[in-house]
Image (cartoon, rainbow over all chains, first blue to last red; front, top):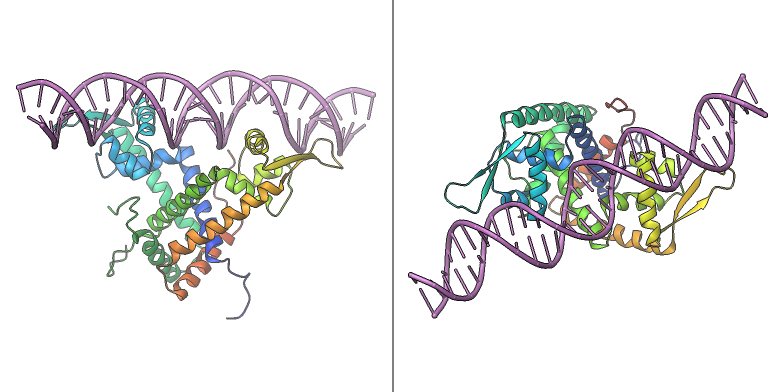
Length: 149
Length: 149
DNA sequence: TCGATTGGTACGTGGCACAAACTAAATTAG
DNA sequence: CTAATTTAGTTTGTGCCACGTACCAATCGA
């Protein structure tokens, strides 16, 4: 391997810096749509499901008391709605409003564009390989942050 | 959409989820040492430099007014110190105290352990490849797709 | 020298996250 | 069938984080 390149970072620095880079993009996209990154995550979950508050807290690894405010602020803006669960009077289910769904789709499209742009410096095979390796990393231990759709 | 054997995530989802996974680890490590993730980043910068407030803000992509509080809270805990710059009466330089340096080293060691553990499901060559690809992604400058806000 | 620029802080606002205390619904024990 | 317990969620209070505006002091430029 001829050395036309700067030396690779170690795996630790490489992953850490990459994570900041990606989070930076996500944060900017969220901000452009008046959202925070945690709300973007919340909405990503709600795109496929209608979970209870506690389920959401588990997905996001937040305390249940943090969910109240998070959902409340989104609700106040008409992006999500609470509804009582039919078979358990204690649980309230959270779902996207049509307005919220629109916003999610916009953000998702933008995320796709920006991450693709970021990855555009790689060749096609490199991108595939990176996707494969990253999938292994996130898919591996019982630590399920955001289960595959 | 690759239609191969194990359903790899697309590059977008793969990178997004990986970034959340890595940030989650970093956040936990920071929390275990009584820090936030932004402080961990701050300290990582201070390990090598003694920048001015505005420089720090640029590294972290924060407003300068955000720096005051960030540095102040760290200073209050004896982890960093402010000092006036010798040749410009306006500038205050920020540096780690010995105590702060110790803390940084602890955190760095822990980050190394945890990220290595995360990456331990990969083979050696896979890790190298991942480090190489990630290095390409983060090393790419001038890829700023975001107009100034 | 005077006006503009630069580096930094102060203050007010709002979002985010937690812990502890609390309510109400559901479940289990006796 | 009650009584005790568990579970889902909210409320309240605290603290951090980030921003924008306004402001001050030092420096620079004409």
